[in-house]
Length: 401
Ligand code: PLP
Image 1: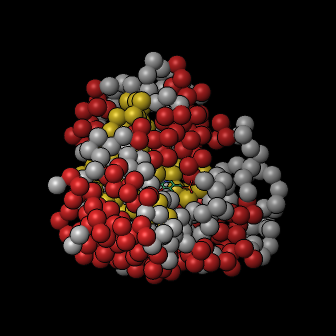
Image 2: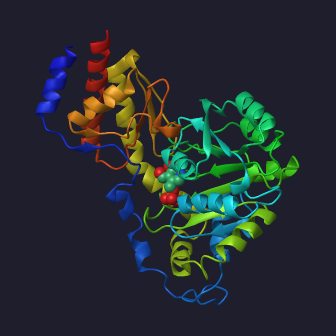
Image 3: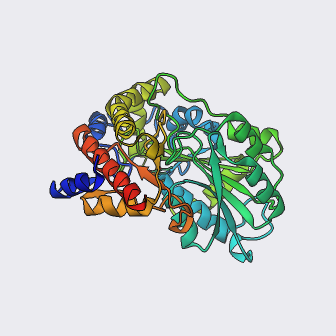
């Protein structure tokens, strides 16, 4: 096959396809249409008026529902607004400006703050660090999560290491699920900084694509068991369960951290949007309700993951490697000269997340990883986009041959 000829034909087609952000498709959003007719009453089961101010920690019934799904005792779970990213951002701002439990001083007073960033990872985590001048150190991922030999050494030796970003289930973008031993080592490892924290972004906790959901070890419980009760900050949201722009987000941690977090947010807000929380309780009902709803998502997006896998296997064979996740929202494609491939795709009307975005400072030292977000386009567009991307990979390989 002649890649230059195929690429010329691709450009000729004048495609306009977008594989950049991991957004749910309109059909996925339609699954939650009935939620917009709720709540049926503004009173909760306990007679609380959800229209009013108050209840900073969020409705108890919603915390009861999501606590077990996020492996956080409901009493230690906080329900926020619609974005868990905002809660992660705010946690860091709070840590910079008000001493986290166990800290010697506020992070802003430290000469240097370092976060470990397993790569490939989620670009918006890295953007938060960059915004606040937090130094980022990449850590390679293995099939079981971050390389724990590297993590343990850095965390034990360097007191400037205050945090690590983790997407432990169906990771963004590789789809990897952290193994039990990785989670145990994260919970148990000695840390030079007394205020070292694990930012456990469990964004895809219930987002399975198969009938055999991945199990994740319970980080909060393990931290407590190993004498590091305050080590974990857990996050999650219903952005990709119900509505990406109008879901509910969660923060969970130890009692001391939750008190610290609420002490800070109390100054920001007199209470969250409890009508939306109540709407979620009525719509999703219980863990079975969440699982049934997530199966409907899997029916819509499972075939999209299969198309990507099939087209890449057919068109690229040994030229590239890619992940075949069992859940989540992304596929990670490794190719030689990723930046050139993304540029060629852009010129052919196929928008991809910039090469390097999966690494701190936008720099992938191997220029290798491309994140594919297959959920938003319809199946036909997706197939065209992936076939086009494969042409670009072949063309760049041919040019470098
Ligand atoms: N965390 C991860 C790992 C994500 O992939 C995303 C969205 O793609 C988010 C957080 C954003 O979550 P939220 O909508 O709750 O802010």
